[in-house]
Length: 605
Ligand SMILES: *[C@@H]1O[C@H](CO)[C@@H](O)[C@H](O)[C@H]1NC(C)=O
Ligand SMILES: *[C@@H]1O[C@H](CO)[C@@H](O)[C@H](O)[C@H]1NC(C)=O
Ligand SMILES: *[C@@H]1O[C@H](CO)[C@@H](O)[C@H](O)[C@H]1NC(C)=O
Ligand SMILES: *[C@@H]1O[C@H](CO)[C@@H](O)[C@H](O)[C@H]1NC(C)=O
Ligand SMILES: *[C@@H]1O[C@H](CO)[C@@H](O)[C@H](O)[C@H]1NC(C)=O
Ligand SMILES: *[C@@H]1O[C@H](CO)[C@@H](O)[C@H](O)[C@H]1NC(C)=O
Ligand SMILES: CC(=O)N[C@H]1CO[C@H](CO)[C@@H](O)[C@@H]1O
Picture: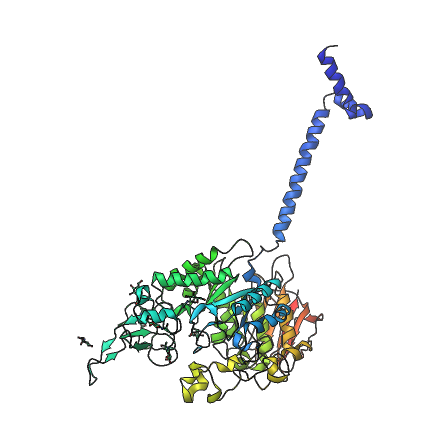
C-alpha cells in the first residue's frame, strides 16, 4: 500500500461523523463538511464575543462602584484622651482606657480613631504643647500601652490616626532649650528676632516686639528670652514657641517624628494648626488685625506635599494608604484646593463654623453645595460637626437636633468626623472660673466663658455610676450633671436612642448609594432639607430632615425621584422626645411627608 492510501484510511476511520451519520457523510463527500465546521466555529466565536460584550455592557450599566480607599468609606472618631476613659483612677483618661473601649467603638461602626495628643508635655495646653513627640506622657500611660492599643485596634479592624503638632513645641523641649542657648543647628529651629528699640520709653534701649502680631490666647505673639536676648514668636501660649518650618533641619526632625509613628503602624496623621506653619517672612510688617501675615501662607503647601510623599513610602498597596489631614479653619475653596493639590485632606469645618440656630434648611443646603463645589473627580469631601476646640453641637444647635444632625453628617457625601460623645448627644458642661482648666479661657478672666474650651471637653458619659463610669478618682473636669440620664448604657437599651440611630446610620452609609459624591437636592423649604443619594444599579435613598422649629409637611414626589411612595429605612424623632411618627419598614406617601420639628427620616426607593 502506498503512504497515501494508508493516510486516507486512517482519516476515514478517525472521522466519527463518517461512521455514525450517513447523511453527513454524504455532505462531506460533497466537500461541504469542512465549511459547516468552519461556520460552526465562527458562529461559536461570535456567540462568545456577543455574550462577553453584553455581559460587559450589563456590567457597565450596573457598575459595582470602584473599590474605594479605606479612608473614603470610614467614619473618623475623635478621641480626646484626657476625657475618654480613665483606667488608673488619677482622674485623667489614658491609653489603657481607650483600649478598654475599643469594643464599643467597633460596635458603634466607626472605622477610624483619631487620638488627640498623648505625647510628653508639661500640659500647659493639654498636650498641644509637645515636649517630646516620640514619648508617651506618663499621664496617659507608656509606649507599651500604645503598642497594645494599636494591636487591639488592628485586631478589630479599626484604623488609628494620631495628632501631628508641627506648628510649635513646648518651651520645655530640648530643642528649644538648645535654641535659646544658640547651640549648633538648633539656633534657627525657632523664630527669633531682635525686636525694636522703644523710642518713647524712658530707657530707649528697651526692647519691643518687632510687630503687632497677636497670640491666639491673648497678648503679643512675641516673648523676650533673657538667655538669647531676643524675642521668640508663638502663635499660641508663650510656652508654645513656633518652630521654623523653613529650616530643613526642622523639617527633617518632623519627618523623623512621622517615621516613628508610621513604624508603629498608624494609618495617618491629623496635622494640627497647619495654617500657622508659616509666618510672613518680613517680621517688621504689622498685620493691623487682618491676620493674613501669619495664616494660610502658601509656604505650607510644598511642606504638606513633602510630608505626604514621605507617608506614601509607607503606603504598601491597596488598603494600606496613609493619610495626612490638615486642620484648616476658615479657609476659602481656593485654599482647600491647594491642600488637595498636594495630596492632603483639608478638614472641612463649614458645619462647625456656619451651623447655628438661625442656619436652617436653605443655609445648610448652601453649606453642602459650597463644600462640594469645584471638587475635582479625585478629591474626596469630608464634613465635621465638632472638635475639642469648639462648643458641642448639641449645645450650639439645641439638643433636640442631635439626631437630625447626625443623619446629616452621616448621609452627605464624603468622610464624616464625629467628636467623642456626639453619638449620644453630649452637651457642653458648665465650669466656674475656678474649675476651668483651659488657658484659652483662663487668660480672659471675666470673659472666660466666651473663650474657654473646657465645656466641650467634659468626660465621656458611659453609664449612670459615679463620674459616669469615666473614672474612680476625681475627674480633671467634672462630668456633666445630666449623666444619670444621658449615657451610653442607658441609650444602648433604648431602640430609638441617639446612639442606636447613630449605629444604624453607620451601617447604612456603607451602601454604594452613599459612598460616592452624588447628591441631588429634593424639596428644600424654610424648615426641611431633603436630598437623594444614589448609585446606578442600587436603590436610591431620600433623606428628609426637619431642621426648623415647627412641624412641617413636604412633598417629595417631584424630581429627582418621580415616585409617590417609598419605604422607611430609618426614622428619628427629636433627640429629646425620641419617638418618630414613622416606623422602620412603613411604606410612606411622599406627597405629604409630615415631620415634627427635629425629626428625620430616610426612605428607600
Ligand atoms: C525624645 O525622647 C527620645 C527618647 O525617648 C530621645 O531620643 C529624643 O532625643 C527626645 N527628643 C527631644 C526633642 O527631646
Ligand atoms: C539647657 O541648655 C543648657 C545649655 O546647654 C544646659 O546647661 C541646661 O542643662 C539645659 N536645660 C535642660 C532642662 O536641659
Ligand atoms: C537699639 O538699642 C541698641 C542697644 O540695645 C543700640 O545698640 C542700637 O543702636 C539701637 N538701635 C536704634 C535703631 O536706635
Ligand atoms: C515655659 O513657659 C512657662 C509659662 O510662661 C514658664 O512658666 C516656664 O518657666 C517656661 N519654661 C521654660 C523651660 O522656659
Ligand atoms: C529659619 O531657618 C533658616 C535656616 O535654615 C534661617 O535662614 C532663617 O533665618 C530662619 N528663619 C527665622 C525666621 O528665624
Ligand atoms: C493683607 O491684607 C491687607 C488688607 O486686605 C492687604 O493690603 C495686604 O496686601 C495683605 N497682605 C498679604 C501678605 O497678603
Ligand atoms: C485651631 C487650633 O487652635 N488648634 C490647635 C493648635 O494649637 C493650639 C495650641 O497648641 C491648640 O490649642 C489648638 O487646639
